[in-house]
Image (cartoon, rainbow, N blue to C red):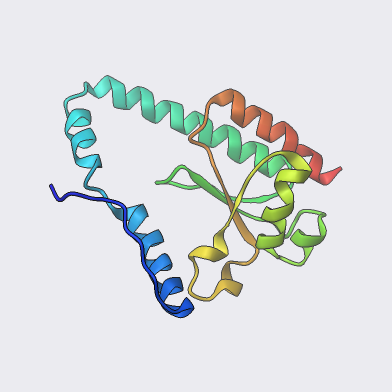
Amino acid sequence: MRERGVAWVTATPGLVTAVRAAKQFLTYVASGPFQYAVAEALALPDSYFDTFRADMLAKRGLLATGLADAGFAVFRPAGTYFITTDIRPLSTEASKNGDGFAFCRALPERTGVVAIPNAVFYDHREAGAPFVRFAFCKRMVVIEEAIERLSKLQR
């Protein structure tokens, strides 16, 4: 395994921006440290994964239903722990305008819940502008509290 360390860069603003973007994407796919965890996981009994799958499906179902009840258009995922939603059916100013960035910036102060604007993952940000995502890899009590808080968006 290759050693990894802390690095820094000094360059023109444009080059620093490019390096920062590359680093961000590499951080999400640098799987070397996870190889040991995967090796351990492969030794676990099937019952562990059955229980884990059932837990994640229950959390996905709870959050998807809660988001739909709060007024979001929900895209139920099949292979991730994020639920993508369309904010346009909501009654907030940012959601009516389909501005996921503004919606996500205002959401923590308004509800105490955090979402991620999907536009950051699009080459053409305007195509992803009205979509935001929520993670359901949380404790059930956290998901329940988030649903309760998000339900107030329509009121």
